[in-house]
Image (cartoon, rainbow, N blue to C red; front, side, top):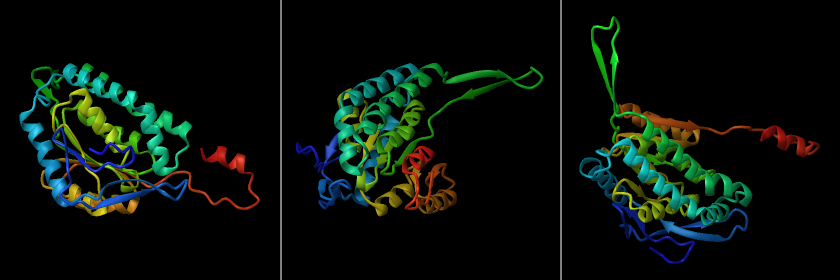
Length: 279
């Protein structure tokens, strides 16, 4: 792992920092300065294979899926504590990557992910693994058992990268799943804050894996035979393609697509009023 704040040369797989199979790096350009802000591995299919294999091993052999809801909740809160401790640095990284105002980044990207993780930790603790319910007529009993769906591929966009990562990762962890996170190449650096937090908290190896790369890496991850569920936020066009792949594979997929508040602002517009209307 690089010690230079804005260059991350390793991927987080199986609880370790591993050199990518392809040494090519992707330069991240700050939209505020239009200058290089940092760099992250370009990624490859081999890196995806390694991350998915790690997540599958953790699913089969680690204590994670056998843990009680309370045990998972405790581990999730430990990760949340580590994320919160890194919140200011993470917010500054996101601002450098995508130009988000720092005041917003501190809330949405610095503190928000930890809060989301704690929310789902509470749900994991409060939700029983198994329930027995009386069937219609009361003569039979239905057993409802909650089990993890498996390995979740979390493909994240660039606009609110940490918040949208946690919207995918937190419920997956609460359910006992393992995760492979693939951030947008424009905001690859902040994803390693989650990897740092997972490592520092002692989360079992393979439960969270972080790989980086572009469109081809994401497409390969989505279609990978070792993935059981896909969660994607991004463009409608990309979501349509992902939906087609998952439909063909009969693979569960969650898609959050498109944007909001689209508008054309003319020269004579009252800008403060428009800004309030689009917020």
